[in-house]
Image (cartoon, rainbow, N blue to C red; front, side):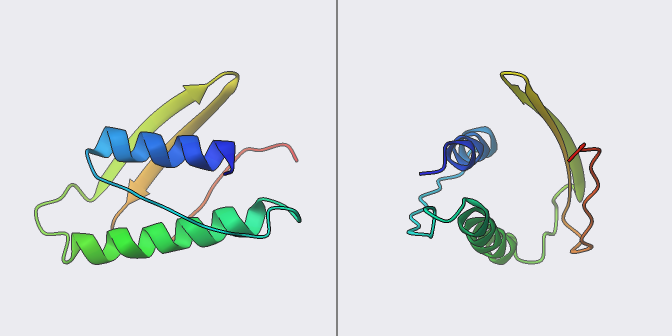
Length: 90
């Protein structure tokens, strides 16, 4: 698999208390981008479907995680309003 993606989804499943089983055969010989994107879109659609109307859920939440020297902060908004911000120096 893709190590970063595997770790991300293992932690998501563990920390959220949900069962998650993902299998994907992608074009990783080209790069990891499309496989990561496709798996994340599929998992997002499954979660959206599983959460239904989202009644009774906290609409927003924020979490920070650190693995080695990498640190990520995620703010999740269940309102279906997409947004991505970053301060990456690419």
